[in-house]
Amino acid sequence: MEFQHIKYHKSASVATIILNRPKRLNALIHAMIREMHEALRDASEDDGVRAVVLKGEGRAFCSGDDMTEMVDHLRPLPMQGREDFRPEGYHSLVIALRELRKPVIAAVQGYALGAGFELALASDFIIAEENAKFGMVLMTRGMVGGTYLLPRLVGLHRATELILLGEMFDARRAEALGFIHKIVSADKLEEETGHLAARLAEGPTAAIGIAKTAIHRGLSMSLREGMEYQGLALSLSIMTDDFREGVLAFVEKRKPNYSGN
Image (cartoon, rainbow, N blue to C red):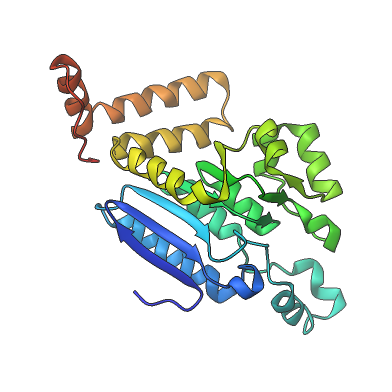
């Protein structure tokens, strides 16, 4: 697969997607978003892929939407029609990352701002280098973002603060807010991300996918609905080959060798 705006490769059951516009701090454009969808689709359909890493080339993870392209799309619209304007943006990527039935790790160096911040939040794990900067900066440009993920991850009042003020903050505050898995030095980011990806890739991939779905759907359910869905998730997980392997490994006192099925 050949791409212009991303790099994509697979190794040892891990697929890696690298945002590749370093001169623009990996700002998102529509062509890049389409390529990311293609890579995510391939990772989803390839049974040999059991974990996904999302990262950026150069000195940033992703600085958000490319404002130059956004301005170009806005210019032709008459003022009376702008209330109906819906940019084909990163929102579809947030959905794709959340619905991917395989674990996703965002490895964040430098800036993760606006749309880039949301891509990181949509991942299952964030490993950040110690100098990383985060921020839902869209409000500083008269735009709105973060309204779905942030309240669910950091609570209503903190989310309101982050969205309305649009300020950048460092990795330590991000860790205190609870959405970073680990902070590492810049020279350890790739190594630590690789360790976590390898660990997840050795896990029961089918059960991980079932758990991801149950976690995200459960957020909009009542207690009774959520527990019933959890029971369904349990029933589905014990029909997998990996359930059998997990039980046998426990009884035989050995490390399980999960197939991902």
